[in-house]
Amino acid sequence: MKKIFTILLTLFTIFSFGNIALAADVTMLNFEKVEQLPKDNLVSIPVYLNTQGKELNSLQLKIDITGEVEELSINIGSKIPVQEITKKVEGKSLFVSLTSLELGKGWSTKEDVELLTIVFKHNGEGEVKLSFDKKETLAGSITSDGNVLTSGEDLLVKIGTIKPVETKEVQKEASPSVEQKAVETDKQVFVKTNNNLLIGVIIGSFTIALIFLIYTIYILKNQKKDKPIEPKLPLN
Image (tube, rainbow, N blue to C red; front, side):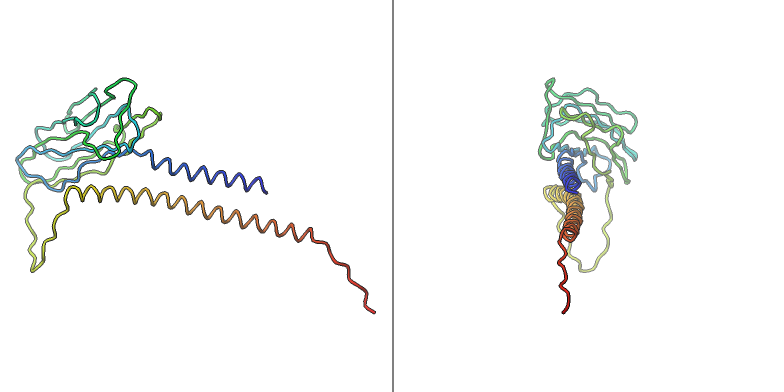
């Protein structure tokens, strides 16, 4: 019984640290949160990369565009030390492949850094949707053989003027700044990661409590079996 208890406790420890390590290895790729853009003009939407300190040595991504766009192009950011392998536009899809600037060395970030910008033009009113192709958006790390990239959600942008809704005596709330939006996004990622860790810790704690209960019952039963029986004296 003691051996079983030790094995279960070891497995729980490995499980808990595994969840923490998994959360720390996530590399995030996200579109800037843009809700509206002007019509009949060239516009640009940044794409941000955050490796959370993990070094990458290669990155490839495919971004699909839905909507009527013209003059579609890609501009690679200058703040990340990478060199272009592939940068092309095919129809409404963008293909980018990057590698380290120095052979055998990687690059990393600890905050959202602009990786590239997507440039296009939309004539008239409408909507444009941008999405990462999950199968063809990958990142390689020096310390890992598998894909370490997690791409963010799709982005739906409204193009043109949105007619205001008529309201009576309703004060307009100030729209959040870019910095506030970035903080809200970081909070959402942090809360999601903490929720996953909390679930793992709760399950592990319940498992340990159950193991201790079974072990205590086992000890008490053995103590009852080992207790000597007192002889009864004859009645006069």
